[in-house]
Length: 238
Image 1 (cartoon, one colour):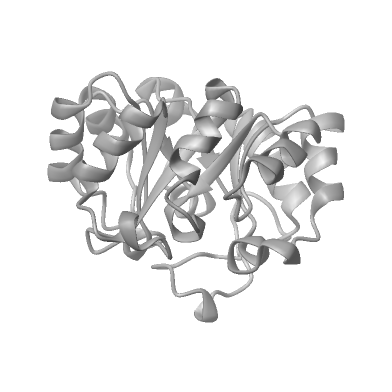
Image 2: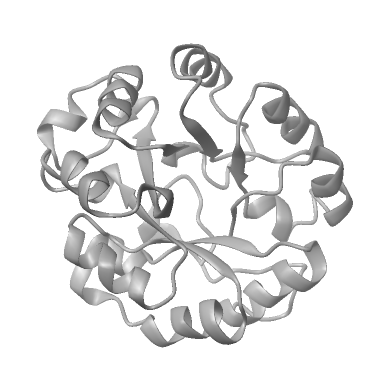
């Protein structure tokens, strides 16, 4: 599906200049073979909206096993047992999203019981406000949330504004500057609205560890050469 501004009811089947089908396996292969990427972020929208609804275990196994692609998976994971299931299936990193975190205790339980190198927290926001069913988390500012995440042992965090996804509007640069200044020890990734090689270079210079990109790849706004030049070869999204 083509994600635009987090309005999932309006998502349409993906149309990409990289391949002539919206099939996830074909798209992943195009990312790897045409763009030289071997680490891909997947958001299982069915599972995010209902954790028991995922029907993509076979696809995940094929991508991580047969295709040997390093996967970062957001599948509505909020508990240790769920994370372990996906890691055992070969997922390289599980992504725990603010928008599906049910309980505040999960912030500490997960990094205490799962290898922290295989965990990423997605700080999901809309217009700068955290989106979460966990009232304690939703009531924090992004910087307050990052402080809690760091103290709980999280090492990697995605700063993701759902309202910017697919918009080509760019990221919240001011927030990134503050986050880098206050939390230089956190591995910060960013997603939502990245649309040009110049933005890649700017994010690299800001000290961002990696980016999530989808629309700009499918529209060929960012190429394999741009990726190589920017040296920001971290998770990419389809």
